[in-house]
Length: 200
Image (cartoon, rainbow, N blue to C red; front, side, top):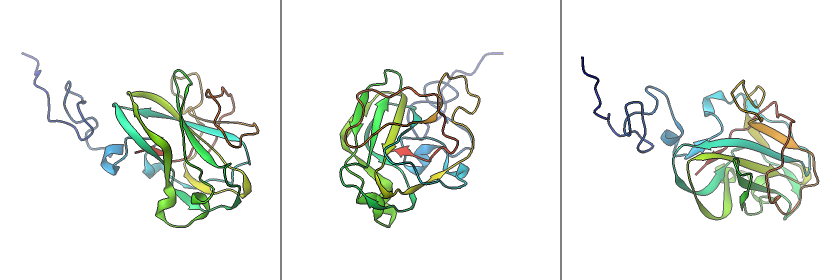
């Protein structure tokens, strides 16, 4: 009996799949491309509620896996409840290469965005678009102000028993205000309520 080597139909997110260079990446499962995202921290069906308010000036970050090379313009972080009294110029998100831990891009200031209602406050614009290779990255964020926004979360520890040496969701207590660190800080403090985030 010969083995079938003809590639399957092209998958929704590009040249990838179970039968070779082309084919459906996950039969019967919703993937980030179906929602017009490039990558996400986990599927939105795993969201169980809103996160607790985050500590001021604490540096939080989540690991995210980009399956194919892409140009990234925004980070998507849907807000379940807006903040108040956020300090202008001290509320940001940032993008890092998880492998090298190098800083890639910082977002525009989010103090006004994270205190405004409506769906638009989920879109966190990077300072400029960036072309990324497939691989592991990290989305970081921090706030300073009276009451921070709350984001949608799931439950469980950051590693979820995967064969990795560092948490997928973590934080580090440090006086983070205006400028993202030049490299992704190492940490052994896992976040117990990972946040839903995506790249677009």
